[in-house]
Length: 93
Image (cartoon, rainbow, N blue to C red; front, side, top):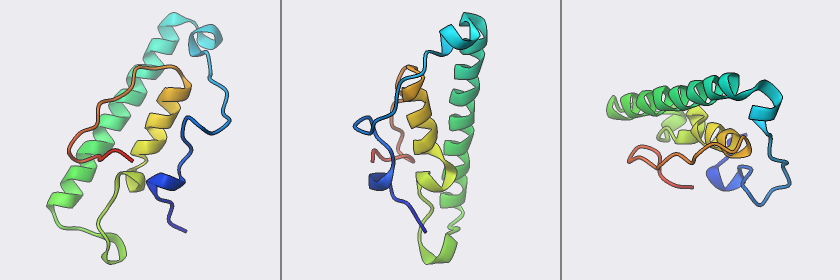
């Protein structure tokens, strides 16, 4: 089953925020944030590449959801990280 952006978990859903600094300490928490931001960046780049190449699964264009971009954004939000600005290849949901 394909899930769209509107089906994703948003701030209105009942998910408790996670205090990563308290859990891991400031240094380790910063490494986790950096890793998630870099993973998101790599996935957005990959999405742009497959779109530019004209690839599509089952006759539909690839969407950010296919690469886990909204899920990473949600996780960053739950962790209290700064929001990521939308890029041309990742439209707001």
